[in-house]
Image (cartoon, rainbow, N blue to C red; front, top):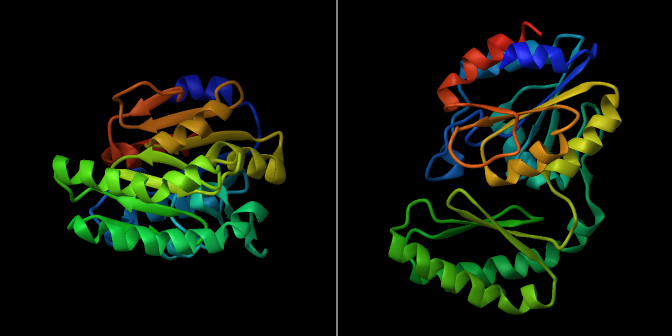
Length: 252
């Protein structure tokens, strides 16, 4: 992997993008239980202080939760799949259309929470500009029922194109009807920081495929988890191989 990457990255500067859950922290039943290992934190913090490197973390989590979990100063944070972006020393940038959808998200959160009380273990996470229905603790029959209730509540707003719905690993996402995703966030940050720099994106979920697509011709995508089709250039088997990958990246 690294020899091929060396041929592709002649640039003096490197932009290193990470997803968080499933990439830097193991996926757990409840997001607040996720643990970012001190070892990975130390490696990423080290890279963030090198002159050639810019580090950014782009997550489906809301920005406040992401920053609290990661806890590394002087890096770029992006929450809600790119709707929120925070550059060091700057104010949080929120996509205007995401802001406009905040009241609707609040309303849908309460409607979904009430409806899904009938499915024990299903829960909805309110991230201000988006919502997540988590189904990781459900049995297959409970998951089917939760999905039915989920779309029953959202059917009309989907039809009216007031929201868009996407799925990930044991999660259903409710987002504003915006043509914006992790790939577009990567592109925005890349141009803002150094358009001539070489971007590398590391992620594990379906939402990370948007970033892999953007970097297919100019950049490098690394998928965590080798199963399934992907737009990433290469992959590592699981999150346990992340320390080794970071050590290799330091040699670029």
